[in-house]
Image (cartoon, rainbow, N blue to C red; front, side, top):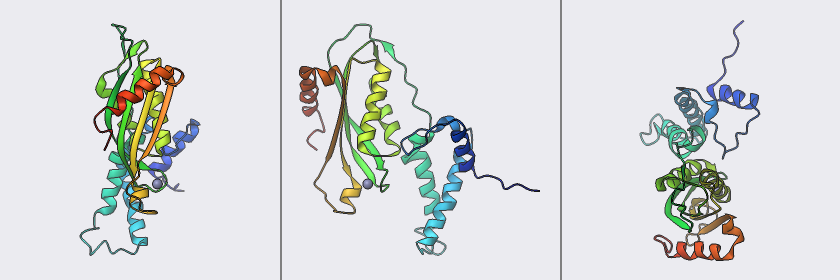
Length: 231
Ligand SMILES: [Zn+2]
C-alpha cells in the first residue's frame, strides 16, 4: 500500500513539533530546514498562491501581468520579506570591550522594512539603537544585520522592538540598551482609515538605560539630533 507523501511544509512542521519548538510568525525555524528544502517550500507556496489567485477569479493564464505572480510572491515571501524566519541568524562575533569605553553610543537611522502580521502590509521606518557598553562590543554594521533579520518576518512593531533589544543585550552584554523604532504602517495608510500622516513609535529600554534617568535622557537627546529623525 502506498502511503501519501507529505508536503515539505508538513515535513518541516513535524520536525518542529517533535522538538516542542515554537513556530509563530516572529519565530525563526531555520534549525528545522535542511539544504535544498527552501526551494521546495517556494514551489509549494507558489502552488497554493496560484489557488488563491484562481479563487480571486483572476484569469492568470491569459493575463501576462499575473501569469507569474504566484511564483513571484512565493519567492518574495521565503527569500526576502519573510527570510528572517527561514535563514539562520547573521554571524556576529562579539569582542571584549578592550578600551573599556564607558559612554553611551547610538547608531541609526537603521532602515526597517517589515510586514505586519495582521494584514501582511508593509511596515517601513527607521530604528535607533543605543548602548551603554558592558563587557563586549560588536561591529557597527552588525546592528543593521540584526535589525533586518528580525524585521524580515510577519510581525508587529512592539515585538520587533523587543526582539532587537534582547539580541543586542545578549550579544554585547551591555549594561544598558535602548531601541526605538519609528515607522509607517501600510495597513494604516493603504487601507482601513487610509491615514497618511501618522507615525508609530515604539521604544524598549533595558538595564541602566531604563533605570538611570540621566542615561535615558542622553539616549533620547542624541537620537533626536540624528539624521532621519524629522522625516
Ligand atoms: Zn496590519
